[in-house]
Length: 108
View (cartoon, rainbow, N blue to C red):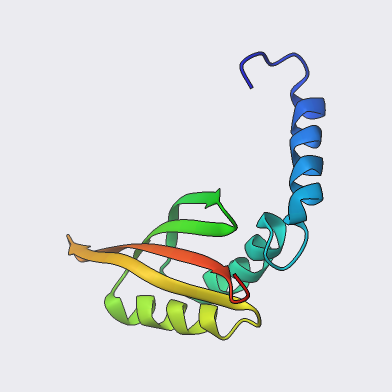
């Protein structure tokens, strides 16, 4: 929004719009976010740097302690019913791994 008059009302409107566009369904933003959150919580040493949503897919930029944790996270993500995902890139630097993942519904 270019003009913010009432933050709460505008945010509620945007969330309602997401819900109308399938946001609450398995392949919508809220459904994907719910499905992705459990594996993120279960994988230790993961730090979420950025989350984006576009065209029915969530993009994640993460830092992890090592490549093994990235593999664990990927396995946990694909074990979620209805999810499909792939690692776009993984770079090791300063004893950390920065990874970019794309997650969507397996139906899309």
